[in-house]
Image 1 (cartoon, rainbow, N blue to C red):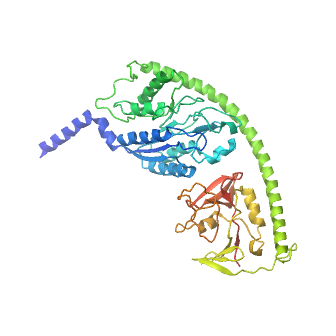
Image 2: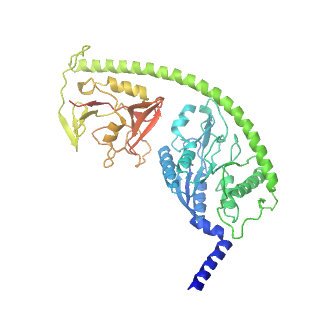
Image 3: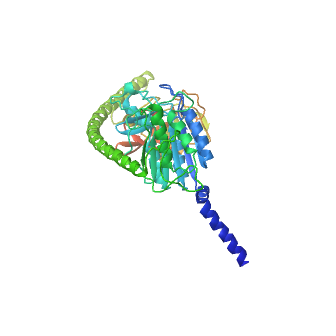
Length: 493
């Protein structure tokens, strides 16, 4: 018995020595999110969906559990990245690949969804995905090793609408330890979409990933050498790395012999020492460039803050004018219906209205109000009907006179969440895409013309909202006005 046990242990030790990389690869959890956006209304692209599809297939062959999303809208990208972050909390290796349009604004990189409506530069941070969101999810997961691949340096389709047009993407100044970020071309330059099935960068990357025994750094060096030859030095991929260990897409069986990189013609790219020296020179040049960019960014932030203060002042004035206009319209309407105009300090004689419809605990009345019998809150039967920022939404709620009541206000996040009902659904008026998934989960007694409504809570320059499509509480800047709605509420007596 002891002899048999000794033989088994000896056999296992031999296997561990011969194929260590295979054993570790099998035990290593690999998770990937792959997004490809081609179908833009402005500046459509030929290859990103093909790039994402082929990359997803390659990663699956290399042991990754892959989530593939094609032609993603803003909400799709936000939800997919959050789910990706939750998956990474289980540990292992995380990889994010994006192909499509990407732009930089004030040194921040944004990935454009296919439904982006960019009319001016300031729209980008509300209608696109901040690439730092991916890095934040990876940092929160703390899974140890992550790879971010951005084939997103194609021309900016909205450049004419921008005050400051910057080509390509900006270098990320900070990323979680244990992360490698790869750009399809160098900072400030534009990558090619490609004439074939794939972009030149993705095609070279997929080919290099298939070669056994190459560390991830060697894979990207192969890609850089190949693209340098193909484009005559016009497109040079760029990486930033804080990896602390080795990672292999396809482990070798006999270990790695040196770090020399060869292209298809067999020419040696560099020795280990030359590669490190070259990398050090690049990093030093990048450090100087970042210092200059940081100084320029500080000046830009100062100007932006002054501009923000002026815009907020204008918005407050517009909100006051809108409230006065609304009050005047309501006084005229009351006069037409034979009601007595309200006298300052007095309360109107209010009729509760006649019941016209019920939906569970909710009762709709003919005076445009809906009573929630569980919370004893009375809601307006419809929102303001158009895009509105937080200040104007609050003014609208405070001045609302539906049903003859004068004590309407803006609801809290908790009160809005109480209306969310996963079991009911309808399509809001603001969705012209025809996508059946873009619906709000809300009783049909209350008309919400878009997906989310402002709430009364604030923190600094941000205000609270509630998203009736996915049932989540979020925060946006006060000045944000896309898709937001004002839905007044009051306490029942």
